[in-house]
Image 1 (cartoon, protein in one colour):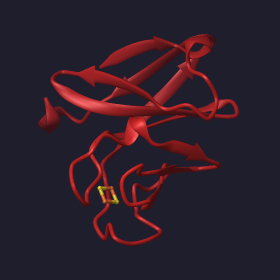
Image 2 (cartoon, protein in one colour):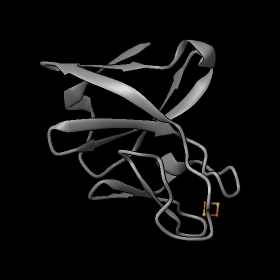
Image 3 (spheres, rainbow, N blue to C red):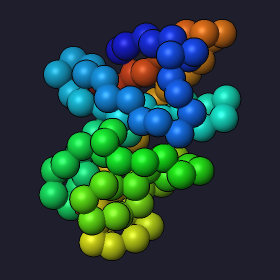
Image 4 (tube, rainbow, N blue to C red):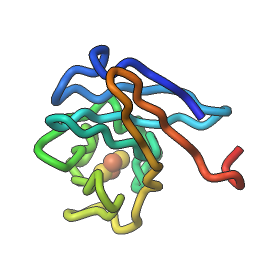
Length: 103
Ligand code: FES
């Protein structure tokens, strides 16, 4: 589990964090915060170096777009979903939780 400040997350700009040894990409979209695995499922590059567009993160290397809500790729070359993690927000505090078996 990790807590971050909502105000520290810039809309449209992904943020990489590490939770229990796992790299996670955070994305603020409006008043919501999404957390997905940071590695692209195509070639293991960091998605937090890509761009956020609406509810999608776009990989900077080959352009696959992943839905931040489901982790599913919506465009090639990636064909495998990335992990999606639970987030909750209480005021300025955003909590990101990884499943027990990911620790
Ligand atoms: S490395 Fe991400 S789409 Fe190829």
